[in-house]
Length: 136
Image 1 (cartoon, one colour):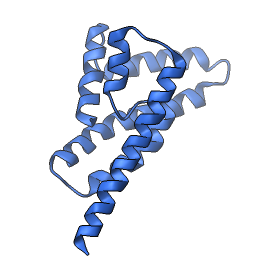
Image 2 (tube, rainbow, N blue to C red; image 1 turned 90 degrees about the vertical axis):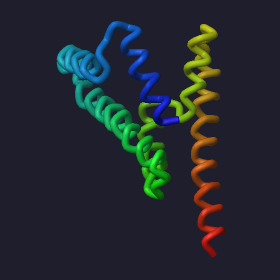
Image 3 (tube, rainbow, N blue to C red; image 1 turned 135 degrees about the vertical axis):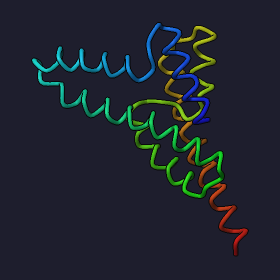
């Protein structure tokens, strides 16, 4: 799912005539300059850093999962805080499906987001529990 999230992020950026990461940094600097007068720049900077770290860590977790490294599960659990702050679904197909259908209901997005995070945490816990039970 992390690899799919990266592909969807890049495809969405290209679809809107933007360069992934570069356009985001440029847009971020514009917003910070605009909001620096009103005092919200520190909060915007914090949210941007969390979102940017999450996107970069998706590369690492996708790579670690492909290599079947045990650290991948820990990294995925650490990403949950960043996902909650940036409101990025773990199941990347949910926002894609809603976008394809043309649905923009806030409640539906919220419910699917909560469900995707619950599903991810449960599967990470379940597979970790199964792995430790099989080692005993």
